[in-house]
Image (tube, rainbow, N blue to C red):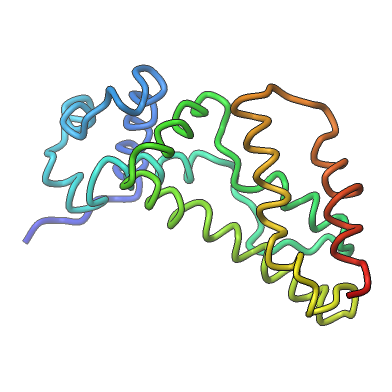
Length: 183
């Protein structure tokens, strides 16, 4: 029976994958390149991650600073602002976001490993504010908060450049007024 990867070896392999993607770009790196650089077998990498997409997204995820499992700043505004900083792709890997647009396997891995867990955290925070009576449960904007917040911020980061204070303006001028209005 084959031995399982140690946590240390797994982190090493993920670090090598991330370094290669940073150096060459996602499209130019193959699972064979990663295996060769890591002195590992491709079978080991496929067995553990199923392919390059899940391996790279896992590497991105573990390279980010750990975040609390829940958002609970004590206020709706604070929770929304906290949500704007979660799930972002580190600057050196913004090219990966372009690949997500055209690579179905990468998009699925990105959604499963990075997007969905963050959306679940946001949904739970919003549910707490609904339960506290701050948001009307019938408010149709409730189902679009993630898109109202994250969409403009991703577009800004990838294509438009940085606008200082954009997250605060989105929360204060768009999302909060729409969420807290009486339906």
